[in-house]
Amino acid sequence: MIRDFKAQIFCRENKLSKREIDTGDPVWIDRIDAFFRRTSLLPADGDPTEYAAAFEAVYPQARHRRQYIDDAISKGSPCFGQKVLASLIAGGKADCVFTTNFDPLIEDATLSANALRPVAMQRRPTVAGIDSAERALRCLNESDWPLVAKLHGDYQEISIKNTGSELEKQDERMRHVLVEASKRFGMVFVGYSGRDASVMGALSSVLTERSPFPNGLYWMTSSASRLLPAVTDFLTKAQKAGVDVAIVECATFDELAADVFRAIDLPSELHDHIIKARPNSRLIPVTVPTSEARAFPVLRYSAVLVEALPSHARKIVLGQSTTSPAVRELLKAAKCRAIIAANGREIAAFGNDQEMLKALSSLNPKLAGTIALDPEADSWALGILYDALVTAFSRWRPLTPRLRRSGHSLTVSSPREGEDEQRRRRRNESLKPLRDAYQSPLTGSVPGLGFPFSEGILLKLEQIDGRWWCGFEPYTHVDIPRLDPAAGTGSIAREPSLDPLSVPRERHGGDPAGDWRRERWAQRYNKQWAAIIHAWAGLLTRSADGETKAFGLEDSAGVDAVFRLNEVTGWSRPSHHHRYFDRKK
Image 1 (cartoon, rainbow, N blue to C red):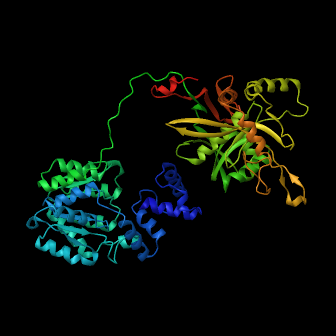
Image 2 (cartoon, helix red, strand yellow):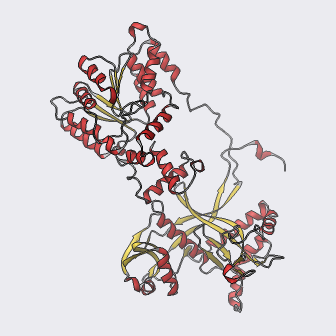
Image 3 (cartoon, rainbow, N blue to C red):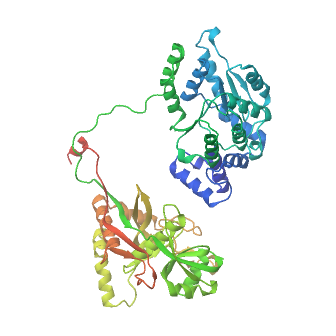
């Protein structure tokens, strides 16, 4: 439910349709979680009040919350674990069940289990909710078991507990039943997070009694490290009170139920009922390939391994808060080459210390050591490393960096007018492998249109299987003019910041260079693609000392962004041999 509520809030805040996202996709899950970490719309992930706050944020009205639960319950059916629990109830092995759920699955499953038994031996549970708490009191006073007590109410009741204010206080009658049962029996807690202050308060009050949880207290969890502080505190106090406390790790309720089923005797009809309810095995026998895999790689990736990333950047503290765009404008005005990420009064930066202090003098900057970079956890750290890598690639190479919010790229620089002979010769030597791979000019004008073009690559820095990779996708950049309304009818202005293969919004009628671009690439097949990838990888990773630096600073001048890249691109080969590889050409 929390995942669904977060998805609805995410779509609402970002003006998306819920049909556009997949809440089961890890990519979307990470994106939604990152959104809530950046905002204060909901309590932090794992906070005890997260569920109530999310539910109330999506459905402020109580009747709408009831309708949501009713709709969800209508699609549900008892799982294997609930069928085992129902058989334990029907077989006289479980007397009292407390649940914070609203659904009728336990009683439905128990009804089915009881139907298999002789009428005289059936044990039909009494179901008590907030609107019918007297039933629970009667069962407790008369020891009339089994009992299923719904602490937060039943989905058909008017008074169900979901929001923070509703969960603050437990119904007094249901609280009394819970406390008294805790004084008579031991308890097993399964799938309960301990988020509800009212329930945890009632349980904690039991610990002041003479004999709390006389048959022990067992708390089931997927991981002991994920227990909420309220639960840890409760279990610690229980242990000090002399309760036999045990934390038991189990992956799922179904797996726990299967272990309990193997360790307990049930009437034959209930035993057979559970056997039939077992889910199909996810493990199926397969024939393991025994032949050697083909040794030669069959796929070459347009990606190079980043063996080492910068671990620290310079930390600069400002006298007043600012933003990254504002800082970049100050650096640009002072002609200071630096790479920065600003957050309030703090800046993480690569560049010459003194030049940056001078450029930012209006903000009263001070050097404050260095700041650690964790691109896996911090998006700003990944951003500054992404910027630095593109800048490093363009240093001492005939490449122009294009840093855009939609993605960074590098394009081959056109020869400068009046370029000296030594610079021209060095440029030609650097680009020769690339020119040979493309078998066509790397820069020029689009025939019939006259728009300048240059070959380039889109860059992406990402982590895969614990390793950082720099992926690159070759494309042809065309500097397409756009209409300039301020200059009058028919006037044009260059659009140097166009994203690859995109069309300016101000110009209608499609991409005038689109057909030429598609035709240019349609004639390139695997062999030429492999040569182009090889040439770009060589150009990006070639360096005298094996390091790629953004500025080439001396150690005392500032903090430089230094990368170490492997010259070999990623490769892939089959995991086993297949007759497909024996086919004739």
